[in-house]
Image 1 (cartoon, rainbow, N blue to C red):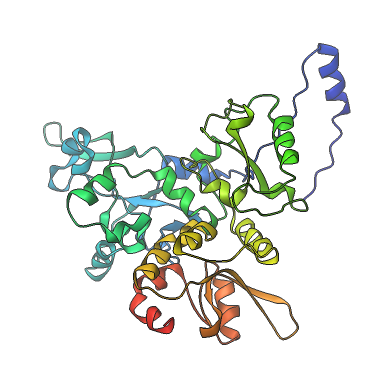
Image 2: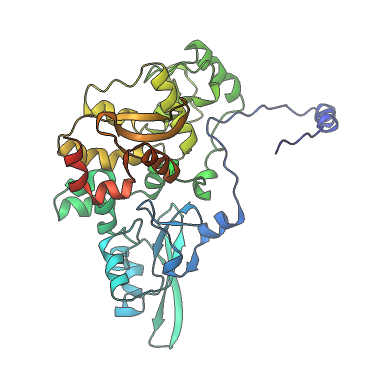
Length: 380
């Protein structure tokens, strides 16, 4: 809905007061924060059946979440968890064999779902001395079964033991939510609040100057965005938003920008990702000379699938393939595709359904990972 508001009286008042007029332009798309997003930041107690795993990732009412059991009374883990989070209940980010076992055993514990990014969880327990319920906060660990099931950052390839424990110790929820941001319409409120911080007052003009200097082209993938300028960002190489030295600024498309190190404040929607893929196809920027180039072009949420495909040495996929019907209309967009074999991987269920009507076999990220032994023979 377009809003038509006259701010002329407000602007006149600003001038009268002698205040400085500041223009603000943010590189990231601002996603509205709804009441449920604030509630999820605090944590919501829900029934296990209400949590959705259709993509393989845990979600609640269309939001990417993690889930954990707040009550640490069982096994007297409460005080141990307060002192060392690794001794507490693990939190889950995806469907895994631990949750599947609970389903089989008919254990439908009430979980807390949240999308906090600081890794600090509210837990409770029973104090035997006072016979009361007590609460505290603990830095819980992520479930390793979840990490393996989605092959997050090639976790499945790590040998069990110290390598995996080190990975868990360094696990960042902000990085995790950022990796799969295009799978979901909304971002965690904890990340959204970071979008407006750190920029200088003259950032709008500085950003425009950099884009114009490089003729609205991405300095990394070479994409020309003269007719899609909103998809072109300006990146601070050292991560300091107030450091606007020219040698610290790079003109990057939103996809290349989100893939820069330590960019867990980014949010790129699925629609933006597909638009970038479309433009790359139009401009011929989809040549895959190595698996490295496949990683660079693909949605980060597909990297777990790509890692397995690389290890099985299948043919390189097309990235961002668009399927057309008999009238030449685009009816489906696939993240990864092998056109000669009519096999693909899609994020959006509607794309998968439309592709199936054209005779394609399309996997979700979840099914590509758990049915890899079925998928690979189709690609050889």
